[in-house]
Image (cartoon, rainbow, N blue to C red):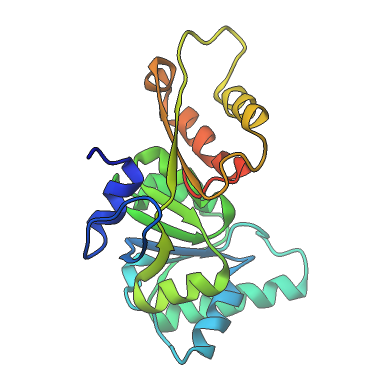
Length: 222
């Protein structure tokens, strides 16, 4: 039976053949947190008894949301991330290096990867043909500790954008139109899989825009 992209990727990262609705433990290729979520993930990691990460090269911390820090509390958060990244030999992207989602797609994510991040817009990397999803800091802590995560394989909604894009219409308009049609929870815990002649014609930055906003329809990935 034909499989969706999500089913194919998650099956490749598991020890069994998976279909929508299955709950499985899967290997992850990248785990990331940013300065708003990283300190909690680190705290949870240590509470579980871990002092290091399972795979330093797969573990990335970004300081990009409050950069430079506007107040002491955020400076303290930055310090926590820097110190842990050094001690765990994890990858650190510091102030001024760029925004996490852009750096992920430029430097780290490959097609077919499983990517989890402590940021709701981690799904941006889905534009590269990866299974990329945001999770809470506790789930991300487990990802750092084990280089694995558990999840339910989502059902897929196939969206075909056909026809031609008129002048003045952009990728942002396409995804906002879709969300307006299916509503903000119309794809809750679903994977949005995009096709059609318009989708095929989009430049990569346009595809990133669409995938970035998949979560605004409640999607697990897109």
